[in-house]
Figure (cartoon, one colour):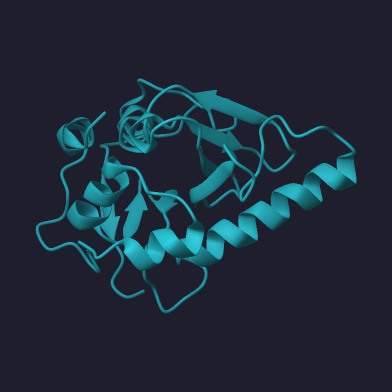
Length: 177
């Protein structure tokens, strides 16, 4: 619901790298959706980095397309469609830019994709984890509650190793992006 659960679970860096506070109009215009408030709070509070050396969230602005939200939304939507075409499966959810479609916001080092399911108001968008083999798992929570739940063990995604996360929940800012 808000970023407070994530801040309690994993303190943000004292000096977040490449934190962004807006303006959001051009970025939202490029994607064609209004971004969730917890994403905006996350980017302003944590900036660029990794959770538990495994999971990251795309940035509204970056010199590399590998981390830039707009570029990754397009790339991940195309990849999802390619996977579905190759498997001849029906999509479990619409895919961006279709109305109510999946919009990528992050990923893992194992190639798992993190999406918002863009149904309803942005603050109510649940998280969908899409595994490489086209299996999907829906989590009825916003992005920051998902991240907080994953790093504390309150939420478990089937694709993640049973022993992950291990150790103290932490966020490591990138040194350059």
